Image (cartoon, rainbow, N blue to C red; front, side, top):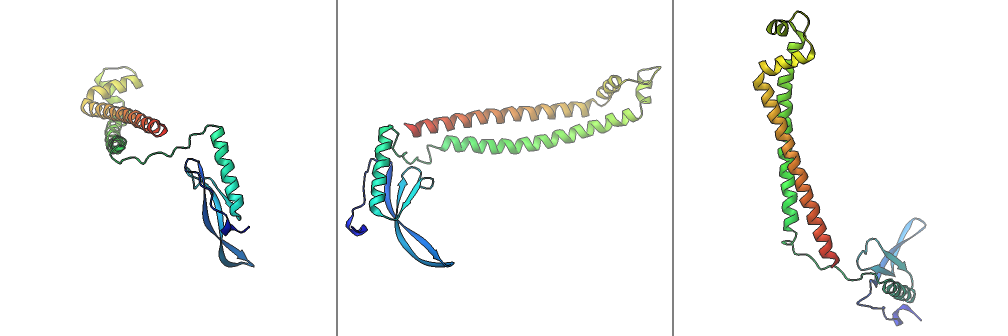
Length: 197
């Protein structure tokens, strides 16, 4: 019996379907005209699960067995409904918020590094010339690192404060990004749950 005499197996409620495909062949390194084959395709994941068959009868039988097997294991064969783009608006909004916050974070981090560099330049200058600290605190010995740090924090209050504020700002934006990540995870969970229902 030829393929032309056999009807294509159809099961509208089944997870698998039979469809006609074309396969290009090669002979002695030359491409030969494509021939018609049949494929048993998973309706949910056609790109991942596709079984090619030369014979329509074999394809029909395989498709029927796969559909019977999925039913016996009570697998969910319903296709997800296409989602309206407005329904995904919450997730898209959160992703846009995250992108904006990441830009803010980069700017804040650059500012923090500039402030830190300014303060560290002053601190290093004092560390190289500890006589300033020795003189200011009327010390008899070479000042310790703690004394140098205390002197710099008092003397370069503006630079130190700017650095601390910049650091706190970067930390705050980082926490906001973490919160947005939590919202994104929640939105994804809701979407997955809706798709399963």
